[in-house]
Amino acid sequence: MELYSSEKFNPEELALLGRAIGTVSQGTIVIGRDGRAISRYGKRALAVGIVSTGSTIMDVRLIPLVALKDFGKKKDYPFVYVYYHGGVKVEISGIDAEEVETILEKRTFVEAAPSDIGATVYYPNALEDILHDVIKHYNFKLDMKALVDCMNTPAVLLFPRISEKFSINVDLINDMMTSYLPPKPKEVFLQKLAKGSYDFGLRFRPDGIIEFYKDGDVKKFDSLWSLMDYLSSLITW
Image: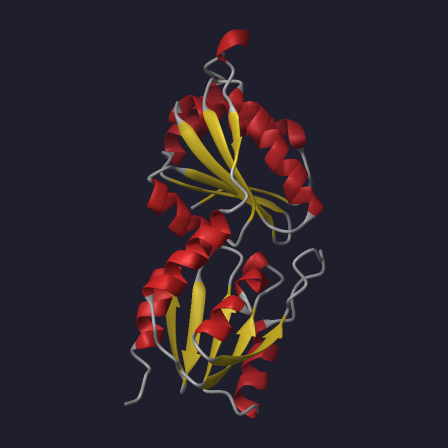
């Protein structure tokens, strides 16, 4: 769920938010980000706050939010994700948001002694791990054409691995994951999808939801696994 949103970049606020998150979690927290520089710096501010409470960070760096959801579930760790979409946003899972907000309001943070400051473990292969698991698990070929709207998120990093493995001819739009410009609107995607010879369309929303479009129907997925389960059902024998 979205825990924080601000049109301005305020590292002091993010550091305090990190202190509240670390106070609630008191364990290992996975942290990731999108492709903008502001998200990288925002993640650092959050990380400083989290480790100040004695909590440990597993930093997976650049990753699509939907893949981070799957990675967090695989590792059974809560996660924090920093991204930019009309402002700086922070998404969390596995952490009590109301408790975080209460601690933030009252400033009742855990303050670790210098010798107990939390560690940072870098794990840059999280996306590769999830892609490897998905590609190893499924063995189907769609032989279809798809329009994919990455909405200027790191979802672009899923391709061409997924498209090559499952035989999907993909056209990408809004694939500039470092851009601060807003992605072309949904109407552009729908118009292109209707006019092109596509079998289906995908939109990877910044909030980690995947929208699937086919024959006027729309389905939503919050996991690469659930998307792949559905895509496998499209095979015509």
